[in-house]
Length: 178
Image (cartoon, rainbow, N blue to C red; front, side):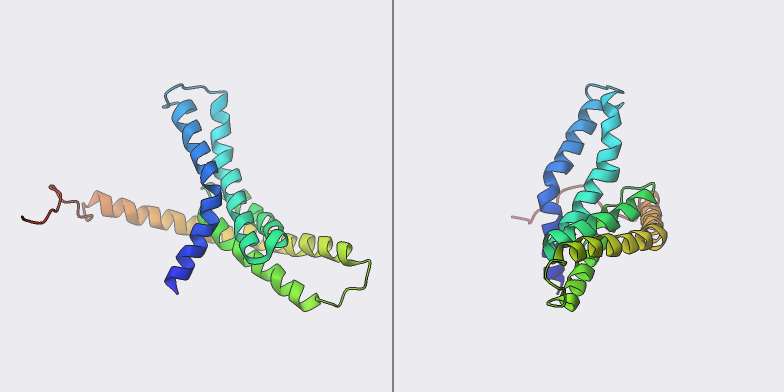
C-alpha cells in the first residue's frame, strides 16, 4: 500500500523537521555565500547534514517499529552508513533505521519469556550492542556503498534531463480558458 509507505516515511521525517530548519537557517546565515559569512560557525553546517540528520532519522525510524530499543539499534546501524559515505545519507537512514527496528523486534519476540529473572537488563543491553554492531558493519560495507552509488546515478540522470531540456516547464501558467 503506497499510502501506508508514504505515511510511514513522513512519520520518520516530520519529528526531525526542526533539524532541517536549523540546518537551513545556519546555511543561509553562515555559509561562505550566506547573509553573514562566518568561517568559524560554518563548521557546524556540514556535521548537521552528514551526521545529525541521518542519525536522527534512523533513530526515529527504529522507534516507529520497536520503540526505544528499535531507535537505539537504528542509530547504531545508521552510523555505519554515515561513516562510509561522502553524501548525506538521508535515504539510507530511512531504509536502515526501520529495518533495524524490525530486526530487534523480531529478536525480542523470539526471546520473549525465555530470559531468567534478573538477566533482563543484561540481555537487553547486549542484544542491542551485538545486533547493532552486526547491522552497522553490514551498513558500512554493503548498504552504504549501494546508496552512495544510487545517489550518484540518480544525480547523473537528473543532470542529463536538465542538460537536454527534457523536463517540460510551461512558459505561461496553465489556466483554464474562461
